[in-house]
Amino acid sequence: MAQYAVLIYADDSAHAPEATAADTASCDQHADELAAADSMLTAYALTPRDMATSLRAGSVTRGPFIDSREVVAGFYVIEAPDLDAALAIAGTNPVLREGGGVEVRPVHSGGVVERVGAQPIA
Image 1 (tube, rainbow, N blue to C red):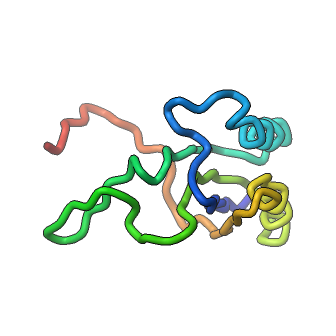
Image 2 (cartoon, rainbow, N blue to C red):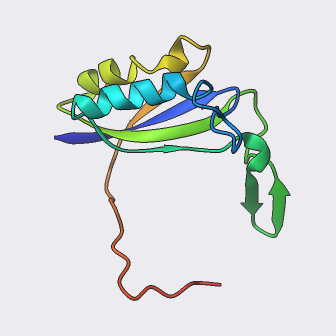
């Protein structure tokens, strides 16, 4: 079955370090529903934009890579038989009712990287 990344765009992430269960309830319920349906493979919630640090050749900047109204608040990977099914699954994301959006992209390759005897880069 094909895999699709669903990128979540919102004014900011609901997952601040001090976030309460009420703050993340719609996100958590949606994740639980996708997991129960065996659609979700992995999911990651990102912290708010003010915690981002961006790198470009020769510079480091506090904040998101692109200054825009919406930022990537998180992403998850789903399995679906085709793009239409993936769009139907992504269309249930609560961010759509809350004024944000999602982007669905087929996953080309990748997966969990096994760390065998890994040494830190820095």
